[in-house]
Length: 98
Image (cartoon, rainbow, N blue to C red):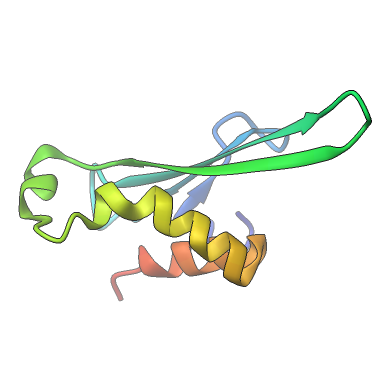
């Protein structure tokens, strides 16, 4: 949020389980990163990070390659390949229109 204040927000504050990514130049297009932490009976901690997309209907109609639909799965692949920080950074940069 400090690095991209015009695009990244934590709607529930600094302890938020949701990070919203929005480019002011792309109204209605929003990417939400949601995370939870699960601890099993043996004390093993497993973070779960998911991407949810919100796009206007007209944008979805233009998305012939189904990029928005496939984004959550692609984000999971990025997490495995790049790690959390780089995957989120890449996602934010993909929303830049400059």
